[in-house]
Image (tube, rainbow, N blue to C red; front, top):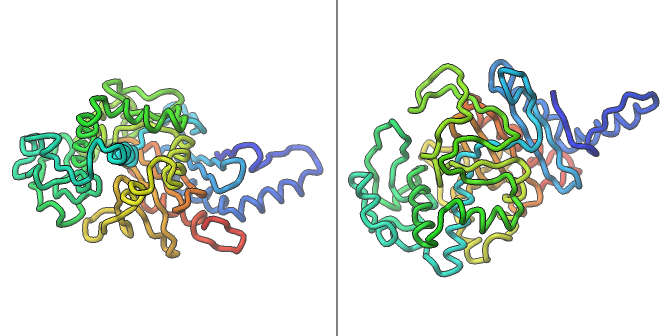
Length: 367
């Protein structure tokens, strides 16, 4: 039911290897992997989801990879390394990075207004909105006052810009449009040119009208219909989710997300001034969003129960739930994905983080 890459857990069948197995198990426990395995088991037990993967990079030469459950509910095929999956809102970290690179190049500023780049657009689609009062910074940190919206649901009225944090996909789809206007290129091409290609993220991309996911991939399952209402479990792997676009439309792999998050946290994608902007946060308290978090410009911080703060992002989109978090230095990162959308994912992912990021012995090097 679970697997790990060679060099971490050694399966032996010959006599005289009990000591080797014992040593490997002890090392596994010391690094929190035994607890993480139990969390993975619980995540899919009693119908909590089809399957889950988790990959850890914590300074050791070989990453640790664990799975539970299945990639395909029809065939029973197990989940495996290298699978592509929809990353949902972690797309925002890529879009925020591209936008800040454009700021560093002088092609736009964080104080530019939506009206400057997209005159009349926000007013046309959201009654009561005023693009002259919404800056690029307010789009990226979700203080624009614009409401969240998905297809098939009525859009609430906007609030005053700068008043408070309101998590909204509208913000990032507008930011994506501004990136395209500022570059004369597509957002997908800018992500590929500026991030995926330099970091060799061969499994990371923003799809266009093609709804298929590159192989290998797990099937994606949902208990929601297209408007977010409850439904029977159904396969949404090829569903048209292009509406999520800059707010949550990207596809990636665990190893690619590790490489991206580590590079971002270590300051390898942005100059110091823009790096500081990305990690300058606003409070999310009272918004009904993820507890114990503060939001930057595409990334957020989350304080764990032990008082340790981790950085990165998560993504919930129909059929897929993902999380990618690391310490502020980018030396220890954990990426996980569920190929279903009905798990208590905040509890599951938090339970995964704590064995790695909350020191329990002096041997834990996480922070």
